[in-house]
Amino acid sequence: MEGLLKSAPQPQENSVPIKAGESSPAVISNKGDNVAENIFFHDGVPIDVYRYFGLELETDQRTKSHVKAIWEFVTKNTNSYSSALLALRRIERKLGSPRGSEGRWDKMYNWVAIRQHMKSKKGEQKQIQEARLKSLEGGEE
View (cartoon, helix red, strand yellow):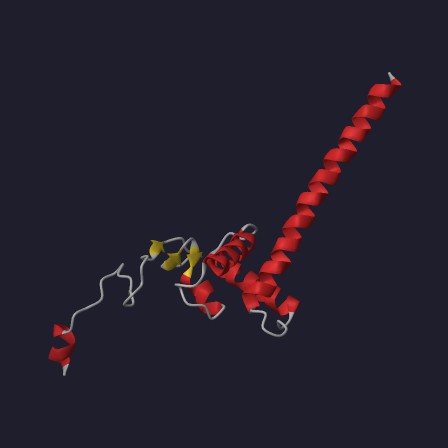
């Protein structure tokens, strides 16, 4: 029995399992949280995120862009992979279950899009207020 184990082909250290029909290979990243871990990416998003939402890697472009936007939003304020995944879960718990035929990623994407829109509007509002203050200060002179 021991001889069989030794003769069996051993997986290479940086090998990536690829399913038949998969068109784009995964990219390996070695950024860790104090431990060495391999993170496999597909279109800029870790494969674990696709698995988390129950999505196939070869899904439609709209869904891929939604998942990528969610991942970019979550990783913006985190410094590690595991804390980004925890933030993803925290947001989903906060939002609750999707309704009807809405997917989990759709609900989270809508929330992310609204947050980003609100942030941009707050920035515009701040610029308008600063311009108004400057014009008022300039008018007093």
